[in-house]
Image: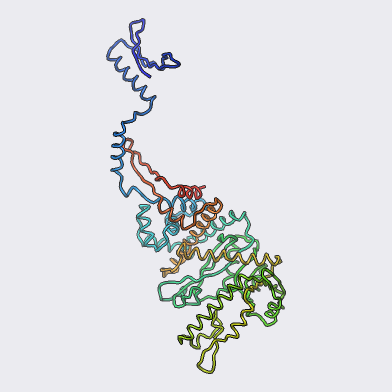
Length: 509
């Protein structure tokens, strides 16, 4: 394109823009007409500007572009770069699940931080300051955590459970037919006790540490329904019915099948489940049952994969299964337990107080008043039970369905493991009940998000583990800058790797 003056018959000049089209000059734009030289020069400048506008901005020479970029980069500071991966991944899932209905930004920060960098509340302050440029005092965080307790009346715990249960219904297609219940102990570093934190039987072997019990109810796949905390010295068999009935009342369960391990097996629990109309599958302890029941089980002579059942005198069905793989593992555990006993006995570390029915201590016996020995006959007799697993049920489910449903109890065991390893729910350093309850509420929310991320990764056949996902989010950055001409502030996510991009897409879809 080019411009020129064209003389008119009237003696005036027109400034026009022309271009070649198919070998012919064609007028593209008429800029203006005048006799005055100064006016014509002004029209020519407008013509050139019009041509430049059509061609787009004029690019500088290569060396000029390098200088422009270098000058711009020299203005950037570390404070303009921040980690944005946690928000892009975990924050997006937080919103999609529905936790953004909780009207407090601090709760969001604490949950995302638990997923991204689990640790103490002091560590949370560092995360907020360093990565989000949000400055909070430790007191403000503690005051907020105090408010998460149901006793404070803010209702966030119940709101969290309601949102989590809605997520579970979405994942399971709107129906919860089976629920799994179990408990675990969470210990404290502090040595002093109170009404909640009490020394008791610890599943983690920390009998001298004050502890609490955490009861967790989940659906198939480990999808969460609700949780409750109990005093550290409560017997777990006393927690099942209150927990199930409370959540069933709140969420309107249609009497799902309740599955729990042998620790919840008690006459009171079974009677209460029967009375409330629940079907159940509970792990049994056949070696502790009557001689009649034990003889019936052993006389079955089950082979690998076989399942049989019979009714006890109380009318309840006992389902018995046999697994060669489990038999090998049972025999291995018994031998290892015996070796530990023999080692302690040889070192003189066993006393009369060790003679009890806990674990492999059942093989200990007394000779006379002071000599402790190992009853090898009892040890060898237990080999008959290797590979045998029994269940108590009132359900009308087929035998193999009873066994397979009970085996899904590993979902809740895995839920505890994820909370203890991935989210580091323990040890707990808090002392006040409000803060303990708030801490567990944060972890429960984070667990739901973690489970949803895992579900999506599997659905997409992405070869990314949860640990790898956490590491990736740690290395996704954004930069905030101001454009030199318009002074407009913009934030841009720096170019991600293909795996990081896939992770973000999976989390945000």
